[in-house]
Length: 303
Image 1 (cartoon, rainbow, N blue to C red):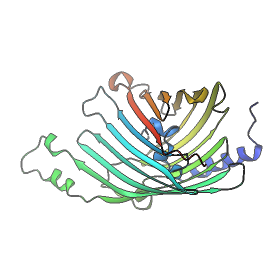
Image 2 (image 1 turned 180 degrees about the vertical axis):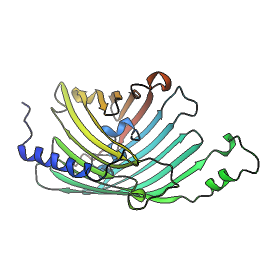
Image 3 (image 1 turned 90 degrees about the vertical axis):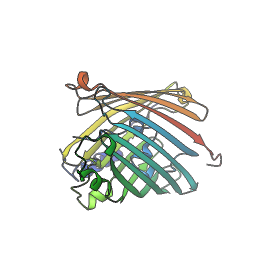
Image 4 (image 1 turned 120 degrees about the vertical axis):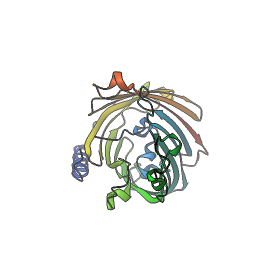
């Protein structure tokens, strides 16, 4: 029988969401990888590094707006592992190219997992630090030979960046908040072209277990970005018994939707996503397609 959330937890969740959404008032939004909603939450919140058993390796590829030349292409590789009982580490490499501009971000992560009692309630803290590099594809530029703008752009140095995250988990409930792109959070950079997220806050609740024929995990999240409207996402992840097959559906407040289906086989999990564009742009841009492969290694049977 499914138990309802205690009233105190509901109040805590609503208070947490109110606090985080009050941090900033921004006005559209960078679309995240679909895998960050459930299967690889580490890439959006460093507090999830080493939260699960074993070493998790994720590889993602996404093609957005396929009908438009020079449309964004994103590739990401990440890994995380619980090295000791309370400490997790991770890495993530993120590369995307949109038109002439390419960006590469390399991060290393440290996370601390603090048990609160014997009922698997815990607080998780994580911080990522690394480098960000932007580059212009000079070979694709049509310009006069003495145009030095592109060369000067590529002479810009890589800069240090980071993310911070926190999460509270029970057997069923997950509350989380994250501050990605810390450089922009503390210092405004007009020359930077990345419109990354400024904050993330989310809540999810598991209904059922892996032994049930069907289990669900409804989720709601709020995201903000520089100079564009904050956005909320609401949906659920549905899994069949033993997590053999999963189905994901998320609706976004920009009137787009994300659908995903995944297949689990031993230590491998492959998942595909399709995200529709804004209601008025679907025919002109096409949708977003994404594929993710997750590999679970070195699972520690002692925990």
